[in-house]
Length: 472
Ligand SMILES: Cc1ncc(COP(=O)(O)O)c(C=O)c1O
Image 1 (tube, rainbow, N blue to C red):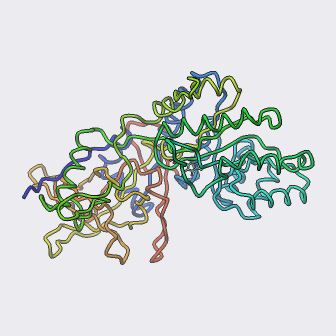
Image 2 (cartoon, protein in one colour):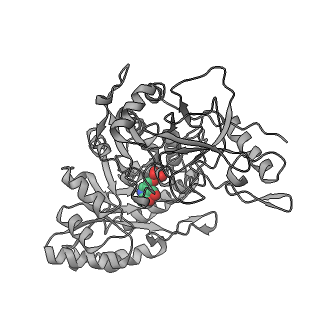
Image 3 (tube, protein in one colour):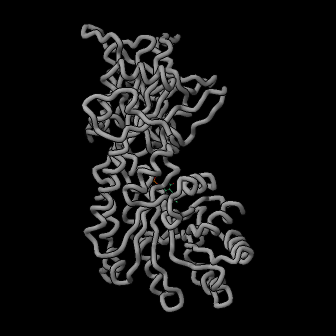
């Protein structure tokens, strides 16, 4: 049976290799900050912001970008976002309070928290932070708090349920678009003017369809036009979900999917732990299901993805960008993942090596599954190993990386990975492009493990020393 492993070479940046290729630097970082560590390159974050700013500046409509903070918890990114001229989309009371404590101008903050308790609503209203309202209970509480504090609340309304190809795009979030007109008329009348200033509409769609986003924008623009004489709205916020690309080669991506299916059908050796199909299943010799991972390879990403949304035309052949201009509506974006492209790496030390009863090499790393985990079924990027004693005559070895939790499933990558040699205790493994959701989103302190330290570098240097890495 075929046993060679498909590769998935990631897109990388020069700064990463200045760390990956320097074993001594990594060893000093681990001595200082323990394993694992997350390292963030702030200039790469700035470059991503600029890519959006550059494309948006080619249009005549107004626009604003808010960094979706939930994608990464590292505090140093907040200042970096503000310094690069964008705002912050906060998703909890704590995220909001942290931004306020860091003296971020409240006009640069919004709250899209899925759950907004009274305290959050009070803090936002007191500080004049725009609240994106999800439901009537929130609206009623906002009205009560605004009345009590005698402060007009600044709000946007979250919408969902857009019609696409004859079907509704269902969501647990927001008000159904068909009810928004009635809601506006019943809630935002003359008597309540002192309570609310309704400034715009918001949506965030699941998945990565530009056509759906374009269609949702048209339907929201229709609503804005319909309500124009009674409610002069100023923005539409389209949330995040702008694709990014993680992989260098489309052919590797396609080959990987084919090999995975072959493995699930038992026509080749497993390429994943326990022959996990990552969404594919074998039903009587036929593949069923879909790959349940992020679409790691994309030709269309960031600026080109955004342009594709703006170019979607309606039945009158008017594009989104033309209508934004005509109606003088500001386009707002809340990218998270795509602003973190090439921004982060996660490195961990090898703690042990072993061979299990099936003959698999298991490499135990000083980290756990919560420190490299997203909602995706696996993180499909080849990691990099740094050896204290590289051996050019060594034989490649296929391994799985295992973590520190007492769970059978604490296998850090489900994919089997080929390394140029068997690592030794103290050698290091680096996972690249982990800043967006991977390093923080599910991080826990189970077993009392400390959370990984987060460090940033803020300039490009020929050689880094430990002093170049800043904690929050
Ligand atoms: C309301 C909202 N805005 C922004 C984002 C950020 O999306 P992404 O990181 O995919 O750009 C999300 C992600 O879930 C979201 O729910």
